[in-house]
Image (cartoon, rainbow, N blue to C red; front, side, top):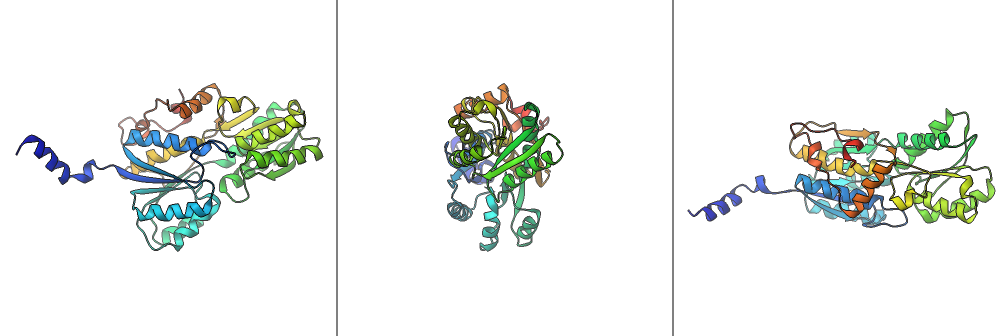
Amino acid sequence: MPKALSFLFCLFCIPSVLAQHKVIFINPGYADTNTTGPFWFEVSELMRDAADDLDIDLTIEYANRNHILMKSLVVEAIDTKPDMLILVDEKSVLSQLLLDLPKFDTPIYFLLNRPTDDELAVLSSKGLNISGSVVPNNVQAGKLLAQKLVEKNNGQANIYAIHGDYTTHASIDRQQGITDYISKTNNAKLVAQSVANWSATQAYRQSIGFLNHQKQINIIWSANDAIALGAIRALNDNKIRDKVLVGAINWPLKAASEKIDICIGGHVTLGALAMVNIYDIFHQQPLELHQSIAIFTPHTAKTITFVEQIHSNSLAIDFKKFSKTEQNSEPFSIAALLP
């Protein structure tokens, strides 16, 4: 048999060896920047980079902050029978959907927001294949941002906290973080709080009202960078920007970060870690099933460069170095990612 024909014959005989694993990620956000910021776009970009390094066939579908659309995308994804389906259980809307669907075998990996322990137990008891999850420690985020703002402030800290939403685990845990910190800090007081649904526009409208009625506010704690930018616009309109410190959870681009006094982030990288973990699952490497990672660190010159590289598609990271399949694999960390 000629060599070319022999090679083709081998390709057809061992498709399982050569075929890429197919992974679908249902991104709850938008494919680009919007009023809630570029966070979900950045998550996707890092996941694509990791998928390329790990030779994974990754498809990303965007729900555009529409939970009805997100549910339909999940159903469509399951019908295509991927090797792994990555879901974000925002506001716990997916747990009940998964229970209501006819039985299916697609493995599921939760990213950034996962069901509660009780919900995970119910899903597993119903026969769903829950392969794992990775989430950030959002209590740490809320606490660290409050700490950095109070430390930077001179004197009594009168804080206005603008939360993300009422039901997402990330928002609830960040709120718990700032509450815990204030309860143990003598010179900090929570004088006002609201919920802006992660939106700069809503944060602006709410801040205008609170700043007019709570003149003692000298710190604004924001659940994300879009909220912070909305609050800053309100401060500028009231001509009191220089009297109020503003902090945000997320690592924004340089132009935005220069407007915010303190930013902390790092959880944008966890989508890439999810891809590494899934690669290791495919290769039967031992992993902690459900990971909660204290990933948050302050925004610095290095992390700003990192975010700029995400947007310019110029990252020079080989994500395979974090896989347990590598002989000298590195622990996944912010330090190992930065230029």
